[in-house]
Each structure stands twice: as C-alpha cells, then as structure tokens.
Length: 243
Image (tube, rainbow, N blue to C red; front, side, top):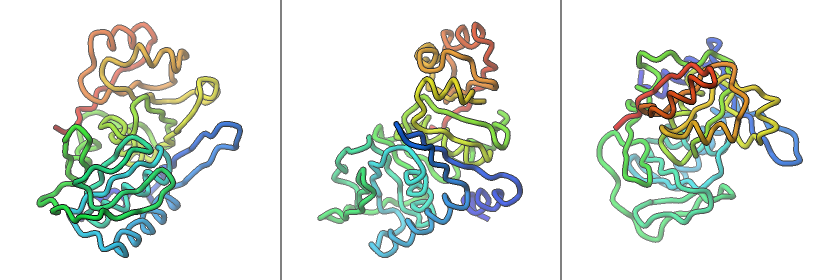
C-alpha cells in the first residue's frame, strides 16, 4: 500500500481530519475528511481531463483552505507534481498547468518536460519532497497531535512548514483552523501552534495566550524559540522537515 492509500485508509478508523475556514463577517466553514477526499477525487478527475500526466507540474495559487488541500491531494492521486505559490501569483514557465486564486485551471501554452522520479511537491526555493518524504513527517519519534486537536499555523501554506502542518493535521485527524483573527484564536484556544524556526516571538503577537497543548517547530528550534516556549510554558516539539 503506497503512503497516500495508507494515509487515506486510516481516516475511517477514528482519524477524521477537518479544515475549518474563518472568514471575516461570515460563519466558519468546516470541511470534514469525507469532503476533503471527495473534493480531491474531483480535482484528480479534472487533472485527468486536462491530460496532465505523472511528473507534470501543477502550480497552485489558491488561498489556504479546503480547496487548497483538495488540490494537493488530487495532484498526489494523479502523480502530478504540486507547486504551491503565493495566492494570486502567476505560474512559473516550467509548470504545465496553473490553478488561480478562483480555482480555475489553465494549461500552459508550452509543454515543459515532466519530472522523472518520485517528486510530489516542489517549493519556490527548489526544495523537492516525494510522497515518502511527506509520509516521513508522521513516522518519526515525535508524537503526533491527538485526534481532534485544534491546530493553527503561523507559516504560510506555500512554504515547507505550512505544508508540513497540513499533512500532520490530516495524518493525526486534527482540526486545522485557517484565517483565524487574534480574537478568534483567544476564543478557540488552539491545542497546537506550528511555526517556522525563530518565529515564536512573532507568534506571541498573534496568539499572546498560550495554547493548551504544544508548539511545534518545523525544523530545529532556535535559542530564542526555547526561551519563549519556556517563558510561556509551551511544551516544545521539533519536527525535522525533509531536505
């Protein structure tokens, strides 16, 4: 069983992730696991209809949320290489297709060479992760957040720590909250905050009340991170990101 099938097979056994989107002046939108997977299957069908093949690169400029996650999972289903970019950004010349901020798919006028090998995600800095590399995030010595834990990320989803947070939340069956304001964070009381190394001081401005659970750092925490965590009483875990 490949990592994606194993990952999906775990959901019915009590591991039921969800993404909660917070919108200004509107009710929160909750996307449960079943919706995330069925939406991913629709994306996979759309990519197949557009004749995207294994190794073709798909640029995604969606804002973080359920549709972003569905697009990532749909790309993984097809073996299409997912390239997250800043929301609204234009595609790079080496991508075969592009999903814009409205979710519309457009094909490139050229047909760049498909990538060989197990590439699954490529970031703007050139970092490349395989599906096995994604899977390794949840198979290390550091315990995952518990099922149902409320998670928020300081890191943008188009950066490695943001993608790692999404994958860990989906793997653990957590609630991943997106777009929450400071007031909403205080009301929410997240169990887990994730941040890039060296960013815990900035997180204090965003969430001055300590979360109930742990602060997870995507990479090695800095001395300042350790100081802030100790000051706030946050248990500090460190997930090593793939190279």
